[in-house]
Picture 1 (cartoon, rainbow, N blue to C red):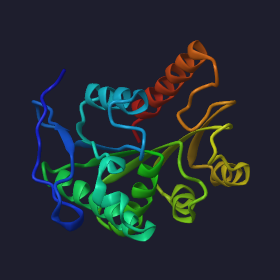
Picture 2 (picture 1 turned 45 degrees about the vertical axis):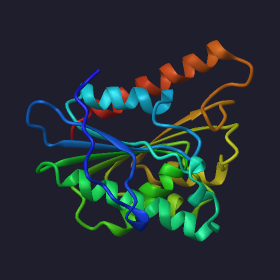
Picture 3 (picture 1 turned 60 degrees about the vertical axis):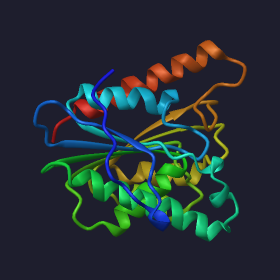
Length: 221
């Protein structure tokens, strides 16, 4: 589809972090980093099409491809150590990616547990370039995720369904009140942004999400 590379990225315990780096053939100042969910892989629609869209918009793209549920070493750890693994990998991915060129624009896109990694990066990395954030089905029950969505000074987009088990009406209202975050709420959509027993409707939801993402990315401030 487009040129792909593997960088030398080592995260938690000096383990290699699975990923693909898509480098534009011409100079670009825009970098996108996509962080999948725990069970929602990089090749699934809500990440595959944004990867394609970021490439089409001229960005270098780092796509994380971790699969923690298939890692025996990960499954045997307690919750706190699992989170250290996830966040350590996210930090390693970011540090490797931003060193590839002199970037002036960074787009972070996270799905589910990937939004926890986004919150961590925003809280701990002080020198991120001009930033915009796309939160796909964020884990709104996690305090840091809610705070980072509400406090992020750059452009931000949140996409969530009302049937998502992590949907929180009060948190969504708080996000709306900030006035700086665009919000797309899909009535009846679950954590995968699917509609129960409605394949065609689910495809239409995906189309709506991608149209909103395309409009969001087209805005230059």
